[in-house]
Amino acid sequence: MIKLKQREKIIFILTIALITIYVVVYWAIKPVRENGQDMTDQIKVAQERLRKSMHMIENTKRLDNDYQKLVEVFGKASSEAAEASAMVARLETVARETNIHITNMQPQRAVNQGALMAFPVDLSIDGSWPDITKFLYEVQAASDLFNIEEMNLEKYSDTASSLRGHIVLSRLRIASSN
Image (tube, rainbow, N blue to C red; front, side):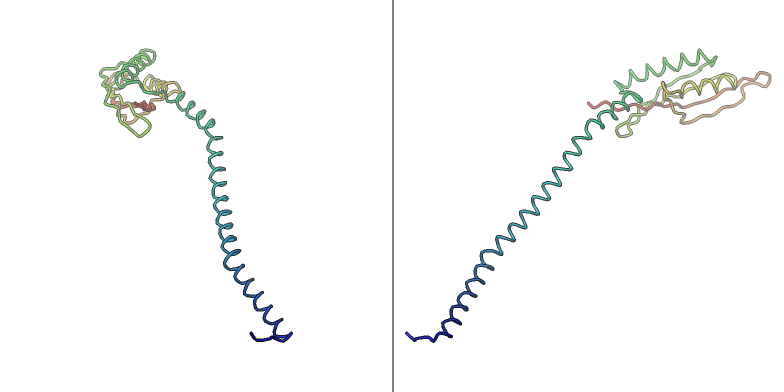
């Protein structure tokens, strides 16, 4: 073996120390640090998902309340026949109260509009202009929620102030989830 001088020993020791530091930093510490950063990123992503999930859970009660308000306003459709029967009865009652004569009433098939169902009714009516406007006002009131889809009025007689008309009314209901 070669005998090294003091200066060569110091250079040799420093070189070995630098190589050891390089190996430790790039092969041991750097992968651990990168994995630690990946873990930190994964933890942040998981925390964000948890925060969003907690926000959704907190909003569940508010959404349930909003849904109940919609059910109160629109009501749930139990069946097409039951809804048509209730609509016919209500329209006959309002017509009687407002002095309108319904000459023909034909409930139509329900129209699915996603979460809502539209229940149209085809009416032929006779009456005076003030009575017809009162009838239309009553059926569009908050409790009935009928919408006028189509309306056609014409003068029925030359001597009387009677009108004859064709009206298509519809009512929206929340579709039952069967």
